[in-house]
Length: 267
Image 1 (cartoon, rainbow, N blue to C red):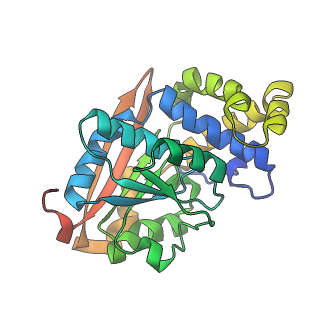
Image 2 (image 1 turned 45 degrees about the vertical axis):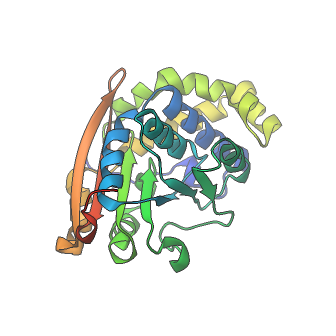
């Protein structure tokens, strides 16, 4: 299926803030409640071992849920997680502050907006990068430079998407996604009344979430496209692609690159 970079509400700066926050917050809980990202924990651990990364720059962090999931899974495996630095073009400060209070040694964040395509030098230098359920938001002319950029000033980059390019796979998000959306007005930190209206009094939040989810499956990159993006890096990085399955018929993928100068074991 050919990739289609269609419109998403979550990307639209002109869309109501409460609607954009609802989509992102509900997705964070969906990933956790549906155990959708748990299969990415093992390859993420391998990535950390190969890069010796103690701190990772989390790009396009959304509400911060994916970083918490990966950190918690490492703890369950008996591995000390790295320190995640949350960043986003639209920072969700209230959500991030709540997460940092719960995980003070694992999570921190940058208050100012951070464009993943223009990361300040002092912020990106020497840090591994993580992009979870977000690379598909970037068109190829931006996604390629973001992936290749890690080769110049970081030990590696780790990409995760909760689906491959198949719209039917988005249905696997529904069992956790619908409850996550319906309770969001009760659990959110901001714009509660607006979110009640969007979620309980109108179908706006549900319609926008379903639209964005289906469009995301059409935007996501294939292994061939990803490897073509990083081909200019040449022999500087080793790249690994893999998939995992989650209930009931979901499938996610991971793709990570490790600088060859950083392939020693993690101490």
